[in-house]
Length: 201
Image (cartoon, rainbow, N blue to C red; front, side):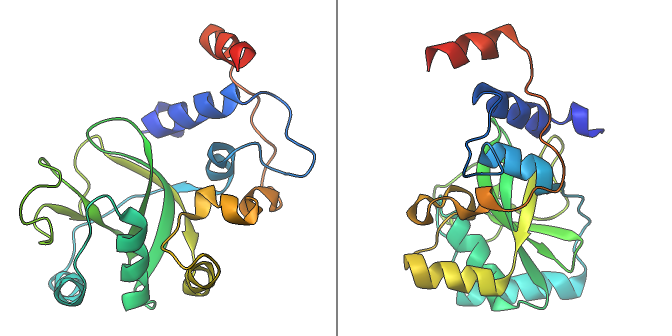
């Protein structure tokens, strides 16, 4: 699948376009959609080895995942073994529409998402890791994100005293949107719907 065929890419392009053509003077990015489009990368993932599966289970014996707490689930996993897990944050699409989300990548190759499950969401026995995303991605699922280091996670915990999203850090004035760009912003999509909605907000 090419980038232009990705549901997440199309969604982020549309949402960024709705914000208008001009970036505010104090920022280098128009939005977090713009930020992830510039700095993010899509996940490719492979099945876990026996040793990797045992590592994820070892984490699960010490920390239970929480319902609808992807930032806690992914950041605490990254802190469990920083040499193996990398924290990633961006947008993902499972069974519905693209949403802001967080997950980890194990050994640079395997997506570990202990928040979402294939099929039924929430419900009884949520704390088990059965049907979690561990390695192989279900058909049609996409993950597009940016990596953040353990020191960055710890600093955000120190400042905010909470497991927070990097991509909506209003408490500190959205510092990521002031970072240098890697590439020029893509021209906003010219869609009748986008133009109409932009004029009404």
